Amino acid sequence: MSQASFTPPLARISHVNHPDGNLKLHGKGLITDIYEKSKELGLEGDIKILKTLELTCAGMCCRFSENGEKLAVGLSNGDVKIYKTSTGSCIYHLSDDETKSDRLPATSVNFVPNELSTRGEMLIVTYASGMIKFWHVSSETALQTIHEQRQILTSSLSPTVSHILTGGTSEQINEYDVETGTKTNVYEPSPNRLVMDGHRCRVFTVKHHPTNEHVFLSGGWDDTVQIWDQREEHSVRRIFGPHICGDGIDVDKKHGHILTASWRKNDVLQVWDFKSGDRIKTLPPDFSADSLLYCGQWMGKQHIVCGGSDNNMVRIIDKTTLATSGIITNLPSGVYSIDHDRNRLSHHHSDVTMIAATAGNHVYLLSNAPNKKD
Image (tube, rainbow, N blue to C red; front, top):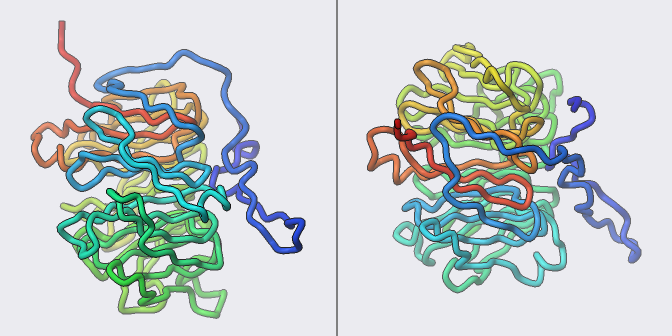
């Protein structure tokens, strides 16, 4: 499959004229209609499927709750399902008249823990329609809705859970107070288009620095990772190279190294020094298969996990040897979103945890526990 013939899923949202004369968002073609012919699922190394959750339509994003007991999955029709991770059962279904009317994808989900919210446990969901909804989880009620005049493609909740950033099909990155929903700041490039102090194309990911509350990173189609200081209107530094088309930026908490996952044929997984912006390493592809990557995360002290299309794979990499420790290939569709249970990692010295990956109409709950030797 050539790169030119396969368009990133969130890039294919189009506008059509509605019969009533108003401009409407249209979701047709959002999920790629190019699927590989049925192939046998390939599993190698220390990775196993714990559960497979069937969805009514494609899963676009997923996130574990802070304690790892719940998994939220945003669907291409705007629904959000919340699953109990121990059983795989769906315990909450978040939708209302607005999401049912728009039927456009949920593009990011973020839990706000009960103990850090005056409004109880919330799930903040962004939508390709431009909505941000603050859902009260247990009552399945939207407490607040914000409407942006653009498609929202990504969001990031700050480490202190005090504010949330959104990015999408404009140059601006918006910041909101989590408790009130008030817009508190807008970050954007300067008017001089010869200065690259922000994005000039759509933004596919924003990511807070895990230890510096004032710093966040963003990436998209313009082949840059922009580094922002919330005390400045424009970005303060940038890294050139990564082609980001999903949740493809992460920052290592201990060393501050930046991981980028690019949707392209070559140099898909790279590590960068945060302070200098220099490339530290381009990770080698797996010898058997590689993918155009949508998403990648540091996972514990010893591993990286990533997912993408083409070979439709989830891959776990040992940070020390740079070798694949576990891989699943030939999933039914590209892997648009990955997350892992950080709470389990904090209680396990060997980086063993649960991983969630969305691929087409399925969510795979995985384990990277070492296989027992015969």
